[in-house]
Image 1: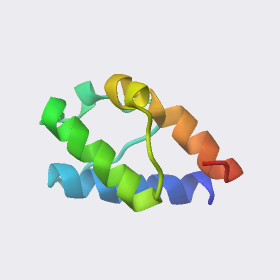
Image 2: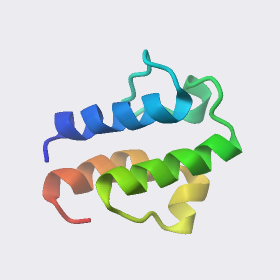
Image 3: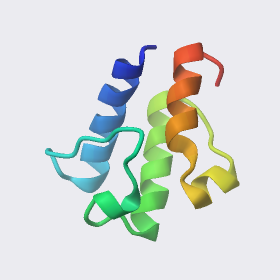
Image 4: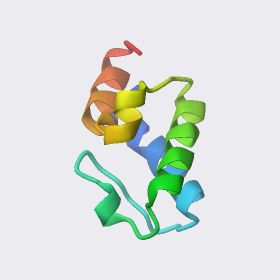
Length: 80
């Protein structure tokens, strides 16, 4: 899966979770960039990303949201 394909799918997940059609995310997107991204929505987002991509994040990744760049890199190599 290409980087562009990953972000197309991620953008759809973010749009669904936050109910906002104008959201566009990239490697630098954080909770501060998106209105309504609180702790509860963070858990909802992580669950939606796991479901969309058929993966599981570690508790450390969920808590710190350090998944963005490593997630995109892993998708390009196919090593989940």
